[in-house]
Each structure stands twice: as C-alpha cells, then as structure tokens.
Length: 395
Image (cartoon, rainbow, N blue to C red):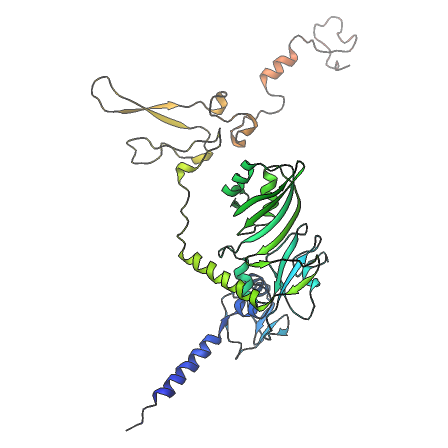
C-alpha cells in the first residue's frame, strides 16, 4: 500500500505554490513599486513601448509578470528592487513638477540627490510653491494623488481684493468649469485687507490650476499660492528650495490616513445623480419636449433641445360633461419677432438665423435708391434720344 504524504509536507507544498502566485504582479504595479513613477506614469511607459519582458516588448497594460522568473527592462535597463525613500521639498516658484520637460526648465527632482530615482506625488503649477512629496513608492503615490481616497491638501492663498462671505459660500457649494463641478472642502479667511485677502483653502482633489480658476470666476486674481500640508504631512519650516527626509513615524501616519480613507470610500453610499427638477435652465434656453396626453408618453414632436420651433398643448373642457381635448397652439418662432422667453439676436442658434445675400434685401435697396437720380457724366444725354448714355457712370 503506497504511503500517503504527511500533512506537513502537503501544507509546505501549498504554501510554496501560494508564494509563487503572490510573486506575480501586473506590469504597471511592478514598475511603480520599483520606482519608475506612479501607476499612471508607468502605464505611459508601457504604451510608448519602452518596457520589455524577456526581450519581448510589452504593450498590454494588464500583463502579469513574475520578477523572480522573468527579466524586465525599461529603456534597456534591468529592473532592480530599490530602497523606498521619501522627501519633503519646498518647491519655489519657477520650478516644474515633471520629470521630463522638453523646454529644459529646472525640475523639482533636481533639488534632491540624483542617486535616488524619485518622482513627484501630485503637481503644483510653475507659478505655485510649497510642499511636494518626492518618492519612489508607486503604491503610496497612487493612493495619495487619486481623488477616490480623498486625501486633503491645504493651501495658503493671497488674492487681490476683498473676499466676501457670499463668495466663500459659493466656493463650498461648488461651481462648474470645463471639467465639471468643482468645490472646495473648506475655506476661511486668515487676514483681510482692503487690497488683498489671505485665505486657507482645503481640497480633496486637484484639477489643473483649480484654485486659480475658481477664484478667477469671482473676480479675484491669485497673487500667491502655497501648499502647506498633504494629509497629516506638514511642510513645517523647510526653507524654499530645500528638502528633508520623512521620518518613519511620518510615513506610518501617511499610510494609516490612506487606509482610513480607503475604508471610508468603500463604505460610503454611491452619489445620487442630480434630479431633473433641480436643474436650472438658462433664461431664453430651448424648452424640453412635453408629452401630450393620449400619446402614450411620447413627446409631441422630435427634435430635442436643438429644435427652434416648439409646440405645446392646452387643455380645454367642453361646457357640458365632455372629456378633455387637446388643442395645439403654435408658439411664436424666432422669425416672427421677439417674444417673452424666446432667444433673439446673436444668442439665437446659428442655424435659425436668417441669412440674406449681400445686396438682395429689397427693403435696404428701396431705402438706398429712394429720391436719388442715376448719376451721369455732363452731356451724357444725347440729342434726339430720351435714354441716358450707357457710358454714363459715377463721377
């Protein structure tokens, strides 16, 4: 009778198979953990064909790689594990937060020792200053920068003019820009003067020049913008253009804040879409189609918002006991003159404007020619003829 393998051997075999399976990672995750950038930056490396595995170029983002069994190269350099490093940098104005700048401007990564391959977490535009985190920890960088986790960033902003309370309220409620609805997580005035106001603004997501665009909507030009905190990480007294390494305690606090934000994001209920009743329409905008009774819920006509001529129905009841009947009533169109609620002039859609060829409008021609005689040269009328000479023209 064959001997059965012992339970300890079978458990060791299972654990070894689990270890082999756990060593395989997605290629973008592997590159991020090796310090080649955040996951999005590593995805760009893959799309550009700069990554190869065992000599074969990889272009699929979902490719799984086992670094213990396969050789991975980026730009011809073999992938080697790096020690994770974290730097707090006080970025001055005039420094870009990109690793590759085609214009050759000074970069924020040039402010730290070149021995470590690091990249910035998030971004600050060239006109802004303050806290930038440089690291080669791709997983940490991805979670700090992703708006899904809602890591709060704190900014000190000096703007021109006096900021009113109504402006602060609207900033918290949110306004619409090209990317959609944006709103600050918190805003307060630190020092108010007649010509300038110093504020503290908190954001959980950072679109391109978001604070500047929000304040510009209310007529305030940003004179100075400085980031002072990312989550529990503070800039402190680091001078402009200088850096310091994070302590182990600071890294642990960052990780704990990310874990808490990740749990909150999983348990938070999904955002409800805005109801149609809460949507405010622009005055003079095209009205939506209204379904008439007896049409099975279908709109009375097709055309949507782009239709210029709209129709509506009015309900009338007979003097006796007859049922309601729908009588179509035509609404005045743009061509029939202005009326309340219609769009006129340059605000009208282009396809609805009347186009008249130059010189063919009869009213204009009639006004120009009224009371005028055709101009002829002196002596243009020949004797014996009642018609003007054809050669007569403008003098």
